[in-house]
Length: 181
Image 1 (cartoon, rainbow, N blue to C red):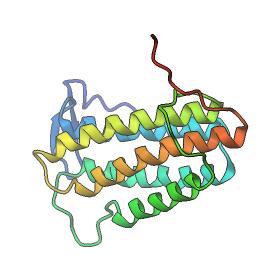
Image 2: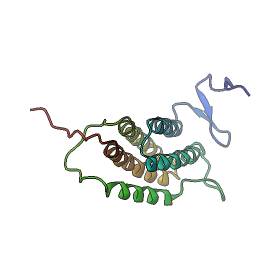
Image 3: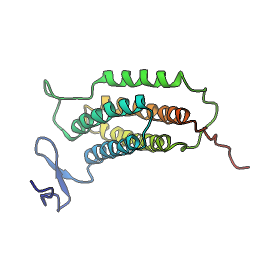
């Protein structure tokens, strides 16, 4: 099977179910950003985060494939169709709580960076927020995006805490932001 089809050469692409839309359609932007986030999480894993973080990121990457399929399917949910499970947002909250229990309370803004894994997690957080904004925009005109918004919101929070956690495990201190005078 060839990777190129030439079907998108006129600026359109196919959604699940066969509908063709412009490549700048909000739905395409949404699942494209989810795909970008998944790729950045691959970079996180290549940076060797703590083992427990790596295991959670692997689960999240699987979630993001389901989320991307959700966003690529304009049809109403059908019985048995894969959808983002709302329980995953709750599981991510528990992951946040576990990591936060090991961290000093945050008293100031911190600059993104630190260890390679910590810096990559900060980047992933920003991509998650961008994906979240795109899905919020999509939700204004399309139903069935509520779970995606909740999931991405919780995930962005988790990635921030995971960056702090990875830096703590690596022994790299956080750099507090100090405004210029």
